[in-house]
Length: 238
Image (cartoon, rainbow, N blue to C red; front, side, top):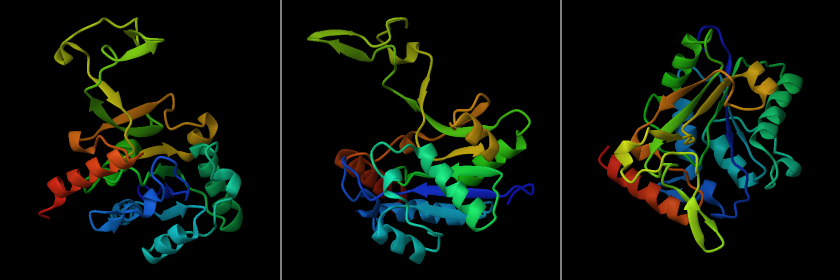
C-alpha cells in the first residue's frame, strides 16, 4: 500500500503458447521464466496482492510455492488466442470483489515474458504515478527503439515501400525524433479508469523510460536466447 491506496499486481500466465510452447515454466538462467517476475513483485514495498492468473495447473502449483496467490484456475474462454488482457484483468478483479470483498485502487500488470526488470522498477513507477495522480491515470514502461518508423518498410507484392509514408524519410538514425516501444516491464493504472477506458494507454498516460538492455519480450526461441544471454551478461556476477 502507498498513500492508503490498495494495489494488486496481476501476472497473466496461460499454459498455451504457439511461439514458444511452455515458455512461462521454461528454465532461463537457473529459474523458471515466471519466477523472475514473481520475485520482483514480491520485492515491492507497495503491492498488497500478487495474483497469477493461469489455466495451467503446473504453473499454478509453482506460483503458489513461490508465495503468490492463485485463488482460481482461469476459465478456458479466457485462455485462448482470442481472449484479451483486459478481459483477464476484469475477471480477476471481479473475483476479488465478489469472493473476497476486496477493492483495489490501482492495477499493475506484470508480464512474465518481460523478465528484465531492475531492482526498484515497480516501486519507482508506482511512486511516479501516485505522486502525479492529479495529472495522470496510468503509466507504461517504454524503451527507445532503433528500428525507427521513418525507415521501416512494407511490402506491396514484391515492391518495397515506406511503412509510414507521411514521415520524413531519413538515412541516419540520429536524424530522427526518438521513437519508443512499450516493453512489458510494467503497466499500471487507476482501477476505475482502466475499467472505463479498457486500456493502460489512458487519455492521461505517463511514461517510464527503461534501459536499453530491457528492450526485450520473449515471444519465441530467439527472444528467449537473447534474454538469457543478457541475463548472463548483466547479472552473471551478482
